[in-house]
Image 1 (tube, rainbow, N blue to C red):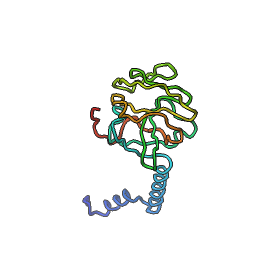
Image 2: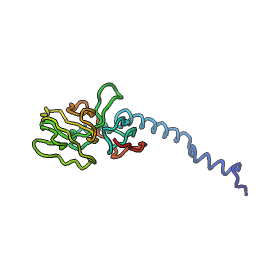
Image 3: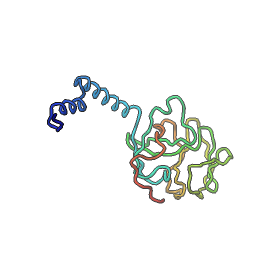
Length: 185
């Protein structure tokens, strides 16, 4: 009994493993899968790359993350959510954390975030900062966003108010995929 790669039995098994017993059904499955992936990429999941140190240590530089575009269809962003914010065009976005919601007043005092007069507990921060910023009142539909790397100088950080219409969605994963090791800020 022949058991080498040239035997008809092995060739039949290999064909069945690669294209299945019914090639038409396999082709239909492939087409459906390709269409599903295309639709998910176009309307549900958006890959983004973190460029810059503003979300360290939570998200490493050059990490690839995914944005769920449908996450805020029924409700708005919540405090603590990490979101993608569209700046211009399809590919330029910021990845920031929501720290204040519409109608709230936010300020920074001695590195603490003050929301409506109370200190915000931020367990995701690893290093304290020394930021000070006067109170800002958010209008309806506005959110206050900032990165997790508060050890950066305040002037080097992009943060502030953003309108709900600029928030693309919530980051799906808690940590980076394919990230290079985080470098210290």
